Image (tube, rainbow, N blue to C red; front, side, top):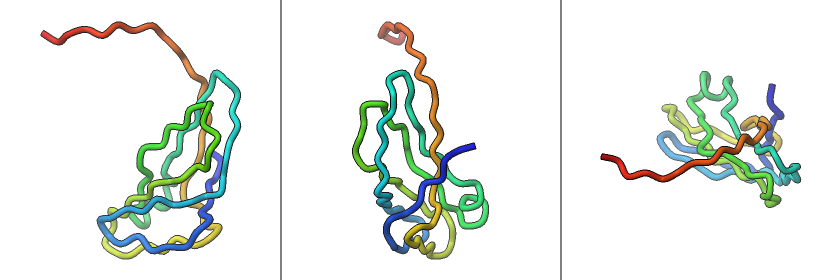
Length: 103
C-alpha cells in the first residue's frame, strides 16, 4: 500500500537503541495532504525494528530521515538501498477546535 523508503547509508543499530537514517529522499506535496512514515511489517516481525514518529507536512521539502528503533535482541545492519520504511499519503482534514481547561 505504501511507497518503500530506502536507506542511503550503512550503519548498525544496536539492541534497545535507535539511529536516524538518511534516505536522500525529498518530496514536494500538494496542499491538502500530508505523508506518514510507517514501519515495514517484515522488519518489525522478524527483527523488532520500528519507525519513530513520522508525520510530514505538505510544506516540508527537506530530506526525509527515518528514526529506526531496535527493540530486538541482536544488532541490526542497515545497508545502502535496503528498504527501511514505507510512506503513505493522506488527505488533510481540517476542523475548528477550541482549547478548554480540564475540570
